[in-house]
Image (tube, rainbow, N blue to C red):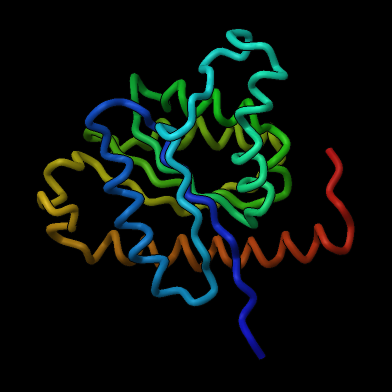
Length: 194
């Protein structure tokens, strides 16, 4: 019997110059490669010209830009959001992205990876939990957090002491794939309506 594959969209939420998000995404992708039941699609918000304020651009113009993203998000069974903590929360680029795609999250699981100073981005994670609950998504309880991240990583993007983060990644992936399968089966039996 073959293992069902969860299609996981990994979203890099910051678009700032010099951001750490791509390093965290690469690290996570390497951990996910060990799971034969996970297929990743990395979505880096810097690659898309999304307005950060919903009224900046007419909706029809934005929808034309969103075609590729809509397809990729619709195809995802689960998500992993990688976010920094800026001013005790998450970046505006991530909020705008979530708001432009508010129906894609429904009845799907979301894993959270954060990075920051002493708090490791945990305040951003807690804010995202509230937003995703409003959008009828299920956030995974266990997250991955990199506190004082520049001190934890070598210049080549590897962790200096990987044991705790490796264990956290395994836990997150195990929970994410369980929820992905459970919610996918539920959506197939009875479409989710909000």
